[in-house]
Image (tube, one colour):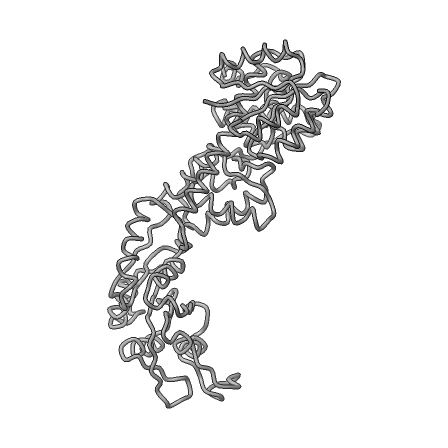
Length: 459
């Protein structure tokens, strides 16, 4: 049962509010001073505080600061007279959720507290999600709990202790290098390093020298001997990302290194023995590259002893909330911001996206949202238009206005267009426009009658 703490030095107001909210099925605690209220907060279990702003001793503003110091997740709604609205607005800048002015209507104050409860519940859900994320991850860098993810992890745990060559197959952005790191972490070679190499990053001559090493003077710019990545990874693991991008000549040398455990530096004559486990990865289907003559068939069979398929993000939507929590934690810390999570509407859109760029695309979207976030919750307004489109949500197009149209009329037309696009959902419209629901209602009250009225009058 949600717990509400009502704080007011007026006993009659306190009793009235207690009765009102008990009828709304809240557990109601009361306090006649800020000091008594802080005692309740220290005890724990309070979800939302409804407090008068002007009180003797500890004021509502000082109480707000104390509450946020003890438990930042507790939401605070302020009650204030018209003459102190400016102070209430200042309190909201310091973390209050909302304020209501006296004398207030029952429906007004109940609605404000209900929305604060919803937000507090959302923050708790995101906290639970982060705890679940920590318990699932352990030392691993891979995040997920969906059925496709678990099937991949089961295969990783099965093949990692072997010495078999592994081929990781997956679309761009699915996290193939993280999979390779996890295989290495669970292998018998985990006490040695995993050396990564992107085969598409260098032209043939440089790629060959990077892999197998070179001797001084082997080519222009080779001013000293270099051992190469195979020798650097000796005793450990060599991860070859985008292996299909190697040219055929380098593929031949790679095949010999895998078969015989021997490498010969560019420009050298001495063969050196190495003990390296190979993990390769490709976004391309290697069978197709073999059929097209771009990849050696014998090398393909050497690499493809065991294939670990990495599912695209669109096939694992259940992992989106966990990934969102993971990326929020990372980018909030990086940007020194406090962001608790996504609103349910924003999270629904993330889960409904097709994610052509997979986890890497989602990482970029979350980083952008964290940077643009105006509060401690990411709303639909912080999501890019392409994600809205991918999730099947409409995006408002250009709005044409005549020269001389008043700003108030432009605002009204933007609001009406937004409401029409979201089927009259005022909360979603507010999120899209980056304004409060209170502002939406105020704009609706002052506008002229329009067709949108029919869609919103009953909300």
